[in-house]
Image (cartoon, rainbow, N blue to C red; front, side, top):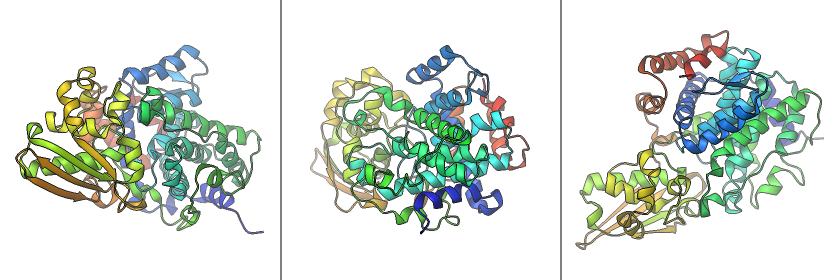
Length: 453
């Protein structure tokens, strides 16, 4: 009998060694780790994320793993839940370009929790993140964009698998255990995107749910719980349940040689991924043509069908989440503030500001048939001014994405800005140095004290 997709992924998860991973993928993993812990640090200060912290702190339990910023120790499952919530709870975390989901928010919090519990090496940590990233990206690439059109959240369905693969590596599960862990992770795979229609801060915990589910799947498999060995390709498996149109070849193509962490997209703005390129396009047009908010008659934005449904429908946000998912609001504050700082999305006065809302109503979005799967974040924009002038622009790749990657200096500037929400400058520089040297650590948990205020 031919080896199934789930078996191939399980074998891949088990067999990849640090030395098998190209140096450029290891360096990219360091960038992902630093970016993610930066998001966790600023995320730990936000009120809606503190709910997850209070929930876990009130429950208590075995002191195994550390919660970022606070230093509170909790069971590994709970620490990963909170840190992953911090790491996805302000819309600054990375994205799998062309696949969706937020792979570093699925892998890094899990690796942090388990390296402290298991005492893993820095090389173990790095390899676990790379492999977890790889598994999650491949699965989501196979069902995108169909799964999104059906209303499933990519991180909700893919995150438990990325988290599980990361955990399975650090728990040193064997091939058979990992195969069962895939089956168990599939039982945690879920989540819809109704929040991008009507808001709700519950979206903040989707990464926490995935991280907890992934670790739990690996731990249960380690203890002997079994799962279906065809959870990906089976009649009621991942591919059949979550999408109408699938590309299973995306899962196994280049497996073991093409590490998908190289497809990371680092966000430059604190909002949904589908709006990143739109903001960038408008910012370039403002810089080139020197117009302002008072000059706008209409802005027409062509984006993919998936992007349109994920960010183009909210005109009057009523909380931070709906503001971050509102394409019209993002463009309005860009015109009015010449920036898209997180503070603007968090300001209730701006959600109801008549000038902001009037400007937002001038934004008309439509589904561009030219925005195909791998170009899901293409932006076609036409700006009509009150003086009769019209400007047009097209941007294929937003900054931070694979074909428009920003420099490491830019990424570190972003990290420093985020980390300052919690850490002093000296500690920030020590953390950068520690991640740079992570492969030299016999105990990766040396990172942990640097993440606490």
